[in-house]
Image 1 (cartoon, rainbow over the protein chains, first blue to last red):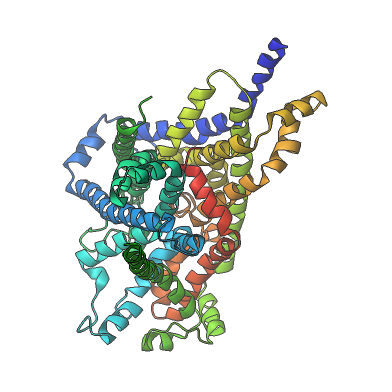
Image 2 (cartoon, each protein chain N blue to C red):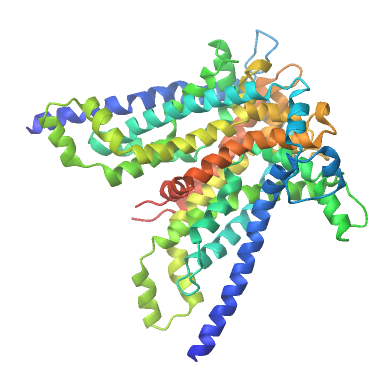
Length: 297
Length: 281
Protein backbone atom coordinates (compact mmCIF):
# COMPACT_ATOMS: atom_id res chain seq x y z
CA UNK A 1 0.00 0.00 0.00
CA UNK A 2 2.70 2.41 1.07
CA UNK A 3 4.70 1.49 -1.97
CA UNK A 4 1.81 2.25 -4.33
CA UNK A 5 1.15 5.64 -2.69
CA UNK A 6 4.79 6.56 -3.20
CA UNK A 7 4.58 5.42 -6.80
CA UNK A 8 1.43 7.42 -7.32
CA UNK A 9 3.18 10.57 -6.12
CA UNK A 10 5.40 10.40 -9.17
CA UNK A 11 2.34 11.63 -11.07
CA UNK A 12 3.15 14.99 -9.50
CA UNK A 13 6.09 15.27 -11.88
CA UNK A 14 3.83 14.51 -14.82
CA UNK A 15 1.46 17.29 -13.84
CA UNK A 16 4.15 19.93 -13.43
CA UNK A 17 6.19 18.78 -16.45
CA UNK A 18 4.48 21.04 -19.06
CA UNK A 19 5.13 24.07 -16.85
CA UNK A 20 8.78 23.17 -16.43
CA UNK A 21 9.28 22.51 -20.15
CA UNK A 22 7.43 25.74 -21.02
CA UNK A 23 9.54 27.62 -18.51
CA UNK A 24 12.83 26.20 -19.81
CA UNK A 25 11.96 27.05 -23.42
CA UNK A 26 10.16 30.38 -23.04
CA UNK A 27 11.46 31.64 -19.70
CA UNK A 28 14.93 30.43 -18.82
CA UNK A 29 16.55 30.16 -22.24
CA UNK A 30 15.58 33.73 -23.23
CA UNK A 31 17.11 34.95 -19.96
CA UNK A 32 20.31 33.04 -20.72
CA UNK A 33 20.27 34.32 -24.30
CA UNK A 34 19.75 37.92 -23.17
CA UNK A 35 22.67 37.65 -20.74
CA UNK A 36 24.82 36.09 -23.47
CA UNK A 37 23.90 38.80 -26.00
CA UNK A 38 24.72 41.52 -23.47
CA UNK A 39 28.40 40.44 -23.67
CA UNK A 40 28.45 40.76 -27.46
CA UNK A 41 28.14 43.49 -30.06
CA UNK A 42 25.37 41.66 -31.94
CA UNK A 43 23.21 43.71 -34.27
CA UNK A 44 20.22 42.66 -36.32
CA UNK A 45 21.96 43.71 -39.53
CA UNK A 46 25.15 41.66 -39.40
CA UNK A 47 25.72 37.92 -39.18
CA UNK A 48 28.99 38.14 -37.29
CA UNK A 49 29.16 39.22 -33.68
CA UNK A 50 32.12 39.46 -31.34
CA UNK A 51 32.39 38.74 -27.67
CA UNK A 52 33.26 42.09 -26.15
CA UNK A 53 33.13 41.26 -22.44
CA UNK A 54 31.78 43.96 -20.22
CA UNK A 55 32.11 46.77 -22.74
CA UNK A 56 28.35 47.19 -23.20
CA UNK A 57 27.98 47.65 -19.47
CA UNK A 58 30.92 50.05 -19.22
CA UNK A 59 29.32 52.12 -21.97
CA UNK A 60 26.00 52.17 -20.16
CA UNK A 61 27.49 53.30 -16.87
CA UNK A 62 29.38 56.05 -18.69
CA UNK A 63 26.22 57.05 -20.55
CA UNK A 64 24.28 59.93 -18.97
CA UNK A 65 21.34 58.93 -21.10
CA UNK A 66 21.07 55.52 -19.43
CA UNK A 67 21.57 56.99 -15.96
CA UNK A 68 18.85 59.48 -16.70
CA UNK A 69 16.52 56.64 -17.74
CA UNK A 70 17.18 54.80 -14.48
CA UNK A 71 16.64 57.97 -12.45
CA UNK A 72 13.41 58.78 -14.32
CA UNK A 73 12.05 55.29 -13.79
CA UNK A 74 12.74 55.37 -10.05
CA UNK A 75 11.41 58.90 -9.69
CA UNK A 76 8.16 58.16 -11.51
CA UNK A 77 7.70 54.92 -9.60
CA UNK A 78 8.34 56.43 -6.15
CA UNK A 79 6.17 59.49 -6.80
CA UNK A 80 3.27 57.23 -7.78
CA UNK A 81 3.84 54.54 -5.16
CA UNK A 82 3.73 56.77 -2.08
CA UNK A 83 0.30 58.29 -2.76
CA UNK A 84 -0.89 54.94 -4.08
CA UNK A 85 -0.15 53.06 -0.87
CA UNK A 86 -1.04 56.05 1.34
CA UNK A 87 -4.45 56.67 -0.17
CA UNK A 88 -5.16 52.95 -0.40
CA UNK A 89 -4.43 52.55 3.32
CA UNK A 90 -6.74 55.40 4.29
CA UNK A 91 -9.54 54.25 1.97
CA UNK A 92 -9.18 50.66 3.20
CA UNK A 93 -9.39 51.73 6.86
CA UNK A 94 -12.56 53.66 6.05
CA UNK A 95 -14.20 50.94 3.99
CA UNK A 96 -13.52 48.24 6.61
CA UNK A 97 -14.37 50.43 9.62
CA UNK A 98 -17.01 48.90 11.88
CA UNK A 99 -17.62 52.35 13.36
CA UNK A 100 -18.32 54.19 10.10
CA UNK A 101 -20.30 51.36 8.44
CA UNK A 102 -19.80 52.76 4.92
CA UNK A 103 -22.52 51.61 2.52
CA UNK A 104 -21.95 49.65 -0.74
CA UNK A 105 -18.30 48.89 0.03
CA UNK A 106 -18.17 46.45 -2.89
CA UNK A 107 -19.35 49.06 -5.39
CA UNK A 108 -16.81 51.70 -4.33
CA UNK A 109 -14.03 49.16 -4.46
CA UNK A 110 -15.09 47.78 -7.84
CA UNK A 111 -15.25 51.24 -9.40
CA UNK A 112 -11.88 52.34 -8.01
CA UNK A 113 -10.37 49.27 -9.61
CA UNK A 114 -11.82 49.82 -13.10
CA UNK A 115 -8.92 51.84 -14.63
CA UNK A 116 -6.53 49.00 -13.90
CA UNK A 117 -8.23 46.78 -16.47
CA UNK A 118 -8.05 49.29 -19.30
CA UNK A 119 -5.47 48.90 -22.03
CA UNK A 120 -2.46 51.05 -21.05
CA UNK A 121 -1.85 51.94 -24.70
CA UNK A 122 -5.40 53.29 -24.97
CA UNK A 123 -5.10 55.06 -21.61
CA UNK A 124 -1.96 56.84 -22.79
CA UNK A 125 -3.68 57.90 -26.01
CA UNK A 126 -6.71 59.02 -24.01
CA UNK A 127 -4.68 61.26 -21.70
CA UNK A 128 -2.73 62.53 -24.71
CA UNK A 129 -6.08 63.65 -26.17
CA UNK A 130 -7.41 65.02 -22.87
CA UNK A 131 -4.27 67.07 -22.21
CA UNK A 132 -3.60 68.18 -25.78
CA UNK A 133 -3.55 71.92 -26.52
CA UNK A 134 -7.14 72.02 -27.78
CA UNK A 135 -8.22 69.25 -25.44
CA UNK A 136 -10.92 69.17 -22.76
CA UNK A 137 -8.60 69.90 -19.82
CA UNK A 138 -7.44 73.18 -21.33
CA UNK A 139 -11.03 74.10 -22.20
CA UNK A 140 -12.10 73.50 -18.62
CA UNK A 141 -9.10 75.20 -17.02
CA UNK A 142 -9.55 78.36 -19.08
CA UNK A 143 -13.32 78.45 -18.59
CA UNK A 144 -13.23 78.18 -14.81
CA UNK A 145 -10.34 80.62 -14.68
CA UNK A 146 -7.57 78.42 -13.29
CA UNK A 147 -5.40 79.21 -16.32
CA UNK A 148 -5.26 82.54 -18.14
CA UNK A 149 -4.63 80.81 -21.43
CA UNK A 150 -4.30 77.25 -22.68
CA UNK A 151 -0.96 75.57 -22.04
CA UNK A 152 1.10 72.84 -23.69
CA UNK A 153 1.07 70.27 -20.89
CA UNK A 154 3.10 67.76 -22.85
CA UNK A 155 5.90 70.17 -23.67
CA UNK A 156 6.76 70.94 -20.06
CA UNK A 157 8.95 68.59 -18.03
CA UNK A 158 6.98 68.95 -14.78
CA UNK A 159 3.50 68.56 -16.21
CA UNK A 160 4.48 65.64 -18.45
CA UNK A 161 6.19 63.76 -15.66
CA UNK A 162 3.35 64.65 -13.31
CA UNK A 163 0.88 63.29 -15.81
CA UNK A 164 2.71 59.95 -16.09
CA UNK A 165 2.82 59.73 -12.30
CA UNK A 166 -0.88 60.55 -12.12
CA UNK A 167 -1.84 57.97 -14.76
CA UNK A 168 0.17 55.27 -12.97
CA UNK A 169 -1.51 56.20 -9.68
CA UNK A 170 -4.93 56.32 -11.37
CA UNK A 171 -4.47 52.83 -12.80
CA UNK A 172 -3.12 51.16 -9.67
CA UNK A 173 -4.54 52.64 -6.47
CA UNK A 174 -7.81 50.67 -6.82
CA UNK A 175 -5.97 47.37 -7.00
CA UNK A 176 -3.95 48.34 -3.92
CA UNK A 177 -7.22 49.15 -2.09
CA UNK A 178 -8.56 45.66 -2.86
CA UNK A 179 -5.39 43.95 -1.64
CA UNK A 180 -5.00 46.05 1.51
CA UNK A 181 -8.69 45.52 2.35
CA UNK A 182 -8.31 41.77 1.91
CA UNK A 183 -5.37 41.92 4.30
CA UNK A 184 -7.28 44.01 6.84
CA UNK A 185 -10.38 41.83 6.84
CA UNK A 186 -8.25 38.74 7.38
CA UNK A 187 -7.09 40.13 10.76
CA UNK A 188 -9.22 38.47 13.49
CA UNK A 189 -11.71 40.89 15.06
CA UNK A 190 -11.01 39.44 18.50
CA UNK A 191 -7.63 41.19 18.50
CA UNK A 192 -9.35 44.58 18.19
CA UNK A 193 -11.97 43.64 20.77
CA UNK A 194 -9.28 42.70 23.26
CA UNK A 195 -7.43 45.95 22.57
CA UNK A 196 -10.63 47.92 23.06
CA UNK A 197 -11.21 46.28 26.42
CA UNK A 198 -7.71 47.39 27.37
CA UNK A 199 -8.69 50.94 26.40
CA UNK A 200 -6.64 51.32 23.20
CA UNK A 201 -7.48 54.22 20.86
CA UNK A 202 -8.20 53.80 17.15
CA UNK A 203 -4.79 55.16 16.21
CA UNK A 204 -3.05 52.83 18.68
CA UNK A 205 -4.90 49.81 17.33
CA UNK A 206 -3.92 50.78 13.78
CA UNK A 207 -0.27 51.13 14.70
CA UNK A 208 0.03 48.11 17.01
CA UNK A 209 -2.32 45.60 15.37
CA UNK A 210 -3.19 46.53 11.79
CA UNK A 211 0.22 47.64 10.55
CA UNK A 212 2.31 44.74 11.90
CA UNK A 213 -0.19 42.15 10.68
CA UNK A 214 -0.33 43.78 7.26
CA UNK A 215 3.41 43.36 6.76
CA UNK A 216 3.25 40.36 4.39
CA UNK A 217 0.63 42.12 2.26
CA UNK A 218 2.75 45.26 2.21
CA UNK A 219 5.77 43.32 1.00
CA UNK A 220 3.65 41.79 -1.73
CA UNK A 221 2.34 45.18 -2.87
CA UNK A 222 5.76 46.80 -2.66
CA UNK A 223 7.56 44.08 -4.61
CA UNK A 224 4.95 43.62 -7.36
CA UNK A 225 4.66 47.38 -7.78
CA UNK A 226 8.43 47.79 -7.95
CA UNK A 227 8.82 45.01 -10.51
CA UNK A 228 6.04 46.49 -12.63
CA UNK A 229 7.26 50.06 -12.18
CA UNK A 230 10.80 49.28 -13.33
CA UNK A 231 9.34 47.92 -16.59
CA UNK A 232 7.07 50.89 -17.23
CA UNK A 233 6.77 51.34 -20.98
CA UNK A 234 3.32 51.75 -22.55
CA UNK A 235 2.23 54.96 -20.82
CA UNK A 236 5.43 57.03 -21.17
CA UNK A 237 6.11 55.61 -24.64
CA UNK A 238 2.72 56.50 -26.08
CA UNK A 239 2.09 59.72 -24.16
CA UNK A 240 4.65 61.76 -26.11
CA UNK A 241 6.91 60.94 -29.04
CA UNK A 242 8.15 57.53 -27.93
CA UNK A 243 11.56 58.93 -26.96
CA UNK A 244 10.59 60.26 -23.56
CA UNK A 245 10.13 63.89 -24.61
CA UNK A 246 10.18 66.63 -23.44
CA UNK A 247 13.92 66.70 -22.60
CA UNK A 248 13.87 62.92 -21.98
CA UNK A 249 11.89 63.58 -18.82
CA UNK A 250 9.78 60.43 -19.14
CA UNK A 251 12.35 58.21 -20.85
CA UNK A 252 12.30 55.00 -18.79
CA UNK A 253 14.55 51.93 -18.75
CA UNK A 254 12.37 50.04 -21.16
CA UNK A 255 12.02 52.96 -23.57
CA UNK A 256 15.81 53.17 -23.72
CA UNK A 257 16.03 49.43 -24.29
CA UNK A 258 13.51 49.69 -27.08
CA UNK A 259 15.36 52.63 -28.65
CA UNK A 260 18.57 50.59 -28.83
CA UNK A 261 16.65 47.62 -30.22
CA UNK A 262 14.89 49.66 -32.89
CA UNK A 263 17.87 51.84 -33.83
CA UNK A 264 18.80 51.72 -37.52
CA UNK A 265 21.32 48.95 -36.93
CA UNK A 266 19.33 47.10 -34.28
CA UNK A 267 21.92 46.96 -31.51
CA UNK A 268 20.44 44.00 -29.69
CA UNK A 269 23.67 43.38 -27.78
CA UNK A 270 23.49 46.84 -26.25
CA UNK A 271 19.73 46.56 -25.75
CA UNK A 272 20.23 43.27 -23.92
CA UNK A 273 22.70 44.87 -21.54
CA UNK A 274 20.02 47.41 -20.57
CA UNK A 275 17.61 44.55 -19.89
CA UNK A 276 20.22 42.67 -17.86
CA UNK A 277 21.14 45.66 -15.70
CA UNK A 278 17.52 46.53 -14.97
CA UNK A 279 16.81 42.84 -14.31
CA UNK A 280 19.64 42.70 -11.77
CA UNK A 281 18.70 46.01 -10.16
CA UNK A 282 15.04 45.03 -9.81
CA UNK A 283 15.70 41.49 -8.64
CA UNK A 284 18.17 42.61 -5.98
CA UNK A 285 15.75 45.22 -4.65
CA UNK A 286 12.75 42.87 -4.77
CA UNK A 287 14.45 39.86 -3.22
CA UNK A 288 16.26 42.10 -0.72
CA UNK A 289 12.97 43.54 0.53
CA UNK A 290 11.42 40.10 0.50
CA UNK A 291 14.15 38.61 2.68
CA UNK A 292 14.67 41.59 4.97
CA UNK A 293 11.02 41.79 5.90
CA UNK A 294 10.00 38.14 5.69
CA UNK A 295 8.32 36.47 8.65
CA UNK A 296 11.00 34.91 10.77
CA UNK A 297 9.90 31.42 11.70
CA UNK B 1 -20.62 61.49 26.03
CA UNK B 2 -22.39 58.94 23.86
CA UNK B 3 -24.10 61.68 21.86
CA UNK B 4 -20.81 63.44 21.19
CA UNK B 5 -19.34 60.16 19.97
CA UNK B 6 -22.26 59.67 17.59
CA UNK B 7 -21.98 63.26 16.39
CA UNK B 8 -18.29 62.80 15.68
CA UNK B 9 -18.97 59.55 13.87
CA UNK B 10 -21.56 61.22 11.67
CA UNK B 11 -19.25 64.14 10.92
CA UNK B 12 -16.50 61.71 10.05
CA UNK B 13 -18.91 59.75 7.86
CA UNK B 14 -19.80 62.86 5.84
CA UNK B 15 -16.13 63.63 5.35
CA UNK B 16 -15.41 60.04 4.27
CA UNK B 17 -18.26 59.94 1.76
CA UNK B 18 -17.14 63.28 0.29
CA UNK B 19 -13.56 62.06 -0.11
CA UNK B 20 -14.70 58.80 -1.65
CA UNK B 21 -16.91 60.73 -4.04
CA UNK B 22 -13.97 62.89 -5.13
CA UNK B 23 -11.85 59.79 -5.71
CA UNK B 24 -14.68 58.23 -7.66
CA UNK B 25 -15.02 61.29 -9.89
CA UNK B 26 -11.28 61.23 -10.60
CA UNK B 27 -11.53 57.54 -11.43
CA UNK B 28 -14.56 57.66 -13.67
CA UNK B 29 -14.48 61.04 -15.43
CA UNK B 30 -11.67 60.30 -17.91
CA UNK B 31 -13.41 57.09 -18.96
CA UNK B 32 -16.78 58.80 -19.16
CA UNK B 33 -15.40 61.63 -21.31
CA UNK B 34 -13.82 59.04 -23.61
CA UNK B 35 -17.13 57.27 -24.16
CA UNK B 36 -19.16 60.48 -24.50
CA UNK B 37 -16.71 62.05 -26.91
CA UNK B 38 -16.87 58.95 -29.10
CA UNK B 39 -20.45 60.02 -29.87
CA UNK B 40 -19.72 63.72 -30.38
CA UNK B 41 -18.56 65.39 -33.58
CA UNK B 42 -15.14 66.98 -33.77
CA UNK B 43 -16.75 70.42 -33.86
CA UNK B 44 -18.71 69.71 -30.68
CA UNK B 45 -15.61 68.39 -28.96
CA UNK B 46 -13.70 71.54 -29.88
CA UNK B 47 -16.49 73.77 -28.66
CA UNK B 48 -16.35 72.48 -25.14
CA UNK B 49 -16.63 69.77 -22.58
CA UNK B 50 -19.85 67.86 -22.11
CA UNK B 51 -20.88 64.93 -19.99
CA UNK B 52 -23.82 64.05 -22.22
CA UNK B 53 -23.59 61.86 -25.32
CA UNK B 54 -24.39 63.27 -28.75
CA UNK B 55 -25.58 61.71 -32.01
CA UNK B 56 -22.46 61.50 -34.17
CA UNK B 57 -21.42 57.95 -33.43
CA UNK B 58 -22.05 56.80 -37.01
CA UNK B 59 -20.14 59.76 -38.53
CA UNK B 60 -17.18 59.12 -36.25
CA UNK B 61 -17.26 55.46 -37.20
CA UNK B 62 -17.18 56.34 -40.92
CA UNK B 63 -14.23 58.68 -40.45
CA UNK B 64 -12.44 56.16 -38.25
CA UNK B 65 -12.59 53.39 -40.84
CA UNK B 66 -12.30 55.74 -43.82
CA UNK B 67 -8.58 56.36 -43.36
CA UNK B 68 -7.22 52.91 -44.10
CA UNK B 69 -7.16 51.72 -40.50
CA UNK B 70 -8.40 48.15 -40.24
CA UNK B 71 -9.53 48.31 -36.65
CA UNK B 72 -11.71 45.21 -36.80
CA UNK B 73 -8.88 43.06 -38.12
CA UNK B 74 -6.83 44.25 -35.12
CA UNK B 75 -9.80 43.43 -32.94
CA UNK B 76 -10.06 39.91 -34.38
CA UNK B 77 -6.28 39.41 -34.02
CA UNK B 78 -6.35 40.51 -30.38
CA UNK B 79 -9.38 38.33 -29.70
CA UNK B 80 -7.69 35.27 -31.22
CA UNK B 81 -4.45 35.80 -29.27
CA UNK B 82 -6.25 36.55 -26.02
CA UNK B 83 -8.60 33.57 -26.20
CA UNK B 84 -5.81 31.14 -27.13
CA UNK B 85 -3.54 32.49 -24.39
CA UNK B 86 -6.38 32.23 -21.89
CA UNK B 87 -7.17 28.59 -22.68
CA UNK B 88 -3.51 27.60 -22.55
CA UNK B 89 -2.70 29.58 -19.42
CA UNK B 90 -5.73 28.29 -17.50
CA UNK B 91 -5.35 24.64 -18.50
CA UNK B 92 -1.63 24.34 -17.82
CA UNK B 93 -1.68 26.46 -14.68
CA UNK B 94 -4.51 24.38 -13.20
CA UNK B 95 -2.63 21.22 -14.18
CA UNK B 96 0.53 22.46 -12.43
CA UNK B 97 -1.33 23.71 -9.36
CA UNK B 98 -3.22 20.42 -9.10
CA UNK B 99 0.06 18.52 -9.23
CA UNK B 100 1.38 20.61 -6.33
CA UNK B 101 -1.78 20.33 -4.23
CA UNK B 102 -2.58 16.64 -4.68
CA UNK B 103 0.77 14.82 -4.87
CA UNK B 104 3.63 14.65 -2.40
CA UNK B 105 6.66 14.40 -4.58
CA UNK B 106 10.25 15.18 -3.74
CA UNK B 107 11.17 18.80 -4.45
CA UNK B 108 7.58 19.96 -4.36
CA UNK B 109 8.22 22.66 -1.77
CA UNK B 110 11.26 23.88 -3.65
CA UNK B 111 9.25 23.99 -6.87
CA UNK B 112 6.47 25.99 -5.23
CA UNK B 113 8.91 28.46 -3.67
CA UNK B 114 10.54 28.79 -7.07
CA UNK B 115 7.15 29.72 -8.55
CA UNK B 116 6.68 32.43 -5.92
CA UNK B 117 10.11 33.83 -6.77
CA UNK B 118 9.22 33.71 -10.49
CA UNK B 119 6.13 35.82 -9.79
CA UNK B 120 8.41 38.50 -8.43
CA UNK B 121 11.19 38.40 -10.97
CA UNK B 122 10.86 40.68 -13.99
CA UNK B 123 11.04 38.11 -16.77
CA UNK B 124 9.90 40.64 -19.34
CA UNK B 125 13.34 42.20 -19.31
CA UNK B 126 14.62 39.18 -21.24
CA UNK B 127 12.49 40.20 -24.23
CA UNK B 128 15.51 40.96 -26.42
CA UNK B 129 17.00 37.49 -25.95
CA UNK B 130 13.53 36.09 -26.47
CA UNK B 131 13.17 38.03 -29.71
CA UNK B 132 16.48 36.86 -31.16
CA UNK B 133 15.77 33.27 -30.14
CA UNK B 134 12.31 33.40 -31.72
CA UNK B 135 13.75 34.86 -34.91
CA UNK B 136 16.20 31.93 -35.10
CA UNK B 137 13.25 29.56 -34.78
CA UNK B 138 11.36 31.57 -37.42
CA UNK B 139 8.66 32.44 -34.92
CA UNK B 140 8.87 36.22 -35.00
CA UNK B 141 5.88 37.85 -36.61
CA UNK B 142 4.02 34.73 -35.52
CA UNK B 143 1.35 34.59 -32.84
CA UNK B 144 2.86 31.40 -31.43
CA UNK B 145 5.60 33.54 -29.86
CA UNK B 146 2.91 35.47 -27.98
CA UNK B 147 0.65 32.56 -27.06
CA UNK B 148 2.91 29.60 -26.18
CA UNK B 149 4.87 31.28 -23.34
CA UNK B 150 1.64 31.38 -21.32
CA UNK B 151 2.13 27.64 -20.68
CA UNK B 152 4.40 28.75 -17.85
CA UNK B 153 2.42 31.51 -16.09
CA UNK B 154 3.82 31.64 -12.57
CA UNK B 155 1.19 34.09 -11.29
CA UNK B 156 -1.65 31.89 -12.51
CA UNK B 157 -0.12 28.78 -10.89
CA UNK B 158 0.19 30.69 -7.61
CA UNK B 159 -3.46 31.68 -7.81
CA UNK B 160 -4.53 28.17 -8.83
CA UNK B 161 -2.67 26.64 -5.89
CA UNK B 162 -4.36 29.01 -3.44
CA UNK B 163 -7.72 28.19 -4.97
CA UNK B 164 -7.31 24.41 -5.17
CA UNK B 165 -6.07 24.30 -1.58
CA UNK B 166 -9.50 25.49 -0.53
CA UNK B 167 -11.63 23.20 -2.72
CA UNK B 168 -9.80 19.94 -3.42
CA UNK B 169 -11.57 17.03 -1.70
CA UNK B 170 -9.07 14.26 -1.16
CA UNK B 171 -11.77 11.71 -0.28
CA UNK B 172 -13.40 12.30 -3.65
CA UNK B 173 -10.10 11.68 -5.42
CA UNK B 174 -9.55 8.46 -3.45
CA UNK B 175 -13.09 7.28 -4.20
CA UNK B 176 -12.55 7.87 -7.92
CA UNK B 177 -9.30 5.90 -7.78
CA UNK B 178 -11.13 2.96 -6.24
CA UNK B 179 -13.62 3.25 -9.11
CA UNK B 180 -10.67 2.81 -11.44
CA UNK B 181 -10.30 6.36 -12.78
CA UNK B 182 -6.83 7.33 -14.02
CA UNK B 183 -4.94 10.20 -12.39
CA UNK B 184 -5.30 12.44 -15.45
CA UNK B 185 -8.91 11.34 -15.81
CA UNK B 186 -9.65 12.46 -12.24
CA UNK B 187 -8.14 15.84 -13.00
CA UNK B 188 -10.11 16.29 -16.23
CA UNK B 189 -13.46 14.80 -15.35
CA UNK B 190 -13.78 15.49 -11.62
CA UNK B 191 -11.50 18.27 -10.41
CA UNK B 192 -11.66 20.67 -13.36
CA UNK B 193 -15.48 20.92 -13.24
CA UNK B 194 -15.36 21.50 -9.48
CA UNK B 195 -12.65 24.13 -9.93
CA UNK B 196 -14.54 25.89 -12.74
CA UNK B 197 -15.22 29.14 -10.81
CA UNK B 198 -11.52 29.48 -9.97
CA UNK B 199 -10.52 28.60 -13.51
CA UNK B 200 -12.94 31.22 -14.76
CA UNK B 201 -11.46 33.93 -12.52
CA UNK B 202 -7.98 32.93 -13.63
CA UNK B 203 -9.20 33.08 -17.22
CA UNK B 204 -10.49 36.64 -16.89
CA UNK B 205 -7.08 37.79 -15.68
CA UNK B 206 -5.26 35.88 -18.41
CA UNK B 207 -7.58 37.34 -21.02
CA UNK B 208 -7.21 40.94 -19.84
CA UNK B 209 -3.43 40.60 -19.60
CA UNK B 210 -3.21 39.27 -23.16
CA UNK B 211 -5.71 41.79 -24.50
CA UNK B 212 -3.81 44.76 -23.03
CA UNK B 213 -0.30 43.50 -23.79
CA UNK B 214 1.47 46.03 -25.97
CA UNK B 215 5.20 45.65 -25.41
CA UNK B 216 5.70 42.01 -26.41
CA UNK B 217 3.52 42.28 -29.50
CA UNK B 218 5.23 45.54 -30.40
CA UNK B 219 8.65 43.83 -30.34
CA UNK B 220 7.65 40.53 -31.94
CA UNK B 221 5.02 41.36 -34.57
CA UNK B 222 6.04 43.30 -37.65
CA UNK B 223 3.52 42.89 -40.48
CA UNK B 224 0.65 45.34 -40.37
CA UNK B 225 -2.07 42.77 -41.04
CA UNK B 226 -0.99 40.96 -37.86
CA UNK B 227 -1.06 44.08 -35.65
CA UNK B 228 -2.97 43.73 -32.42
CA UNK B 229 -5.36 46.33 -31.05
CA UNK B 230 -2.89 48.11 -28.72
CA UNK B 231 -0.49 48.45 -31.65
CA UNK B 232 -3.17 50.09 -33.77
CA UNK B 233 -3.81 52.63 -31.02
CA UNK B 234 -0.51 54.18 -32.08
CA UNK B 235 -1.99 54.91 -35.49
CA UNK B 236 -4.84 56.79 -33.82
CA UNK B 237 -2.28 59.04 -32.21
CA UNK B 238 -0.54 59.70 -35.52
CA UNK B 239 -0.90 62.34 -38.21
CA UNK B 240 -3.68 60.62 -40.13
CA UNK B 241 -6.21 61.47 -37.45
CA UNK B 242 -4.64 64.72 -36.35
CA UNK B 243 -7.85 66.72 -36.08
CA UNK B 244 -10.49 64.00 -36.15
CA UNK B 245 -11.07 63.97 -32.40
CA UNK B 246 -14.41 62.19 -32.54
CA UNK B 247 -12.91 59.31 -34.52
CA UNK B 248 -9.90 59.07 -32.18
CA UNK B 249 -12.12 58.79 -29.11
CA UNK B 250 -14.29 56.22 -30.86
CA UNK B 251 -11.27 54.13 -31.79
CA UNK B 252 -10.08 54.18 -28.18
CA UNK B 253 -13.57 53.35 -26.95
CA UNK B 254 -13.68 50.26 -29.18
CA UNK B 255 -10.48 48.96 -27.55
CA UNK B 256 -11.66 49.42 -23.95
CA UNK B 257 -15.43 48.91 -24.02
CA UNK B 258 -15.18 45.08 -24.33
CA UNK B 259 -13.14 45.02 -21.13
CA UNK B 260 -15.62 47.32 -19.37
CA UNK B 261 -18.45 44.97 -20.38
CA UNK B 262 -16.55 41.93 -19.09
CA UNK B 263 -15.94 43.82 -15.86
CA UNK B 264 -19.56 44.87 -15.50
CA UNK B 265 -20.59 41.22 -15.81
CA UNK B 266 -17.92 39.60 -13.68
CA UNK B 267 -16.54 42.24 -11.29
CA UNK B 268 -17.31 39.98 -8.33
CA UNK B 269 -14.99 37.27 -9.64
CA UNK B 270 -12.30 39.79 -10.50
CA UNK B 271 -12.26 41.59 -7.15
CA UNK B 272 -12.25 38.36 -5.14
CA UNK B 273 -9.58 37.00 -7.49
CA UNK B 274 -7.20 39.87 -6.72
CA UNK B 275 -7.77 39.47 -3.01
CA UNK B 276 -7.13 35.74 -3.28
CA UNK B 277 -3.97 36.08 -5.34
CA UNK B 278 -2.38 38.17 -2.62
CA UNK B 279 -3.63 36.90 0.74
CA UNK B 280 -2.28 33.62 1.96
CA UNK B 281 -5.00 31.70 3.71
